[in-house]
Image (cartoon, rainbow, N blue to C red; front, side, top):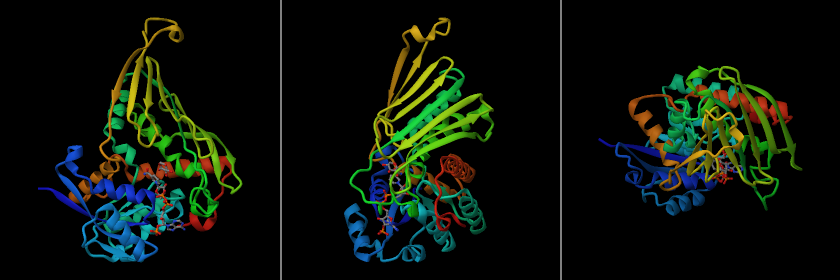
Length: 363
Ligand SMILES: NC(=O)C1=CN([C@@H]2O[C@H](COP(=O)(O)OP(=O)(O)OC[C@H]3O[C@@H](n4cnc5c(N)ncnc54)[C@H](OP(=O)(O)O)[C@@H]3O)[C@@H](O)[C@H]2O)C=CC1
Ligand SMILES: O=C1OC[C@@H](O)[C@H](O)[C@H]1O
């Protein structure tokens, strides 16, 4: 029996379009047989924008176009709402959806401040509804494979993760969400969630870490003329593992993103980035009996993982399975995961000196 999840989407920008196309792709293309998705409604700042969106992405002709988000929340055909609005709006949109009785998949970062995530989790529990942050990369088969290998000691004891995500945003005005402090702009909120996804995968969820929270041991940023961070670097300490993570993000110089995991027996390097959607990796093992690791050739094995379509369908499959099973939260992105990443982003922003308006942080 195939479970069909009826989605409504609010905030019809770039990522909502990618998400819509992915959920409407054939599940067989990714070997999925138990769930499928239908796009039944879209809510926007204008009805025409919503109608054009639905027709462009190939939704069925009975899908409803609304000139408001509330139209989607109140539509009885909608089972789950996908929220693709700017960061500042996630909390309020997710709250409104839950209050209207809808399950929620909310774009990353789910909230501006950790207290907002705590409030959403409490509300979802009270309403008996499924809530998940759209940390889509957590659901990639490649990431699951890397997680398993690292946790099984493929590169020995893991000592350091170096995760950097840079992407340039050129030709945009200060009103654009990426540069607008009132919309939660800057590299920390937009890109840093991905270095964190990798650090969580490799270190936080490492069995020997026993879910011990890392400490932020410093964060520094460069601000741009609009007052948002355009480049940030932070250091995380995992005392349970005796391992560190260096994470960085930038929206000014882009350049070559980096993801290297270093262990006592070698390295695992992720290639074909961005960090949000990588396609391959290599495991580089040294001869542990050789006392001089720097001088020696590594035994290198490469693994390729092409992604069918864009890859956001896997997170949609996850929430469909959760809803079908009556589960409120995902085991791969539980509410505590979203709360912890929000706490770390709060801490990084505080140490880097980035203050958002109180109006977008409040519960
Ligand atoms: N998972 C991923 O790979 C990606 C995730 N994202 C995340 O998705 C979210 C949206 O990003 P993206 O699609 O690039 O953003 P866009 O700017 O392209 O779209 C955002 C949409 O939100 C709505 N909106 C509501 N209020 C505002 C406002 N005050 N200013 C601007 N837009 C508003 C608009 O839709 P409408 O007019 O229909 O209401 C707008 O089109 C962000 O949280 C971002 O972090 C972004 C890119 C990739
Ligand atoms: O989530 C994201 O990943 C890819 C980036 O292009 C985008 O700005 C960001 O929001």
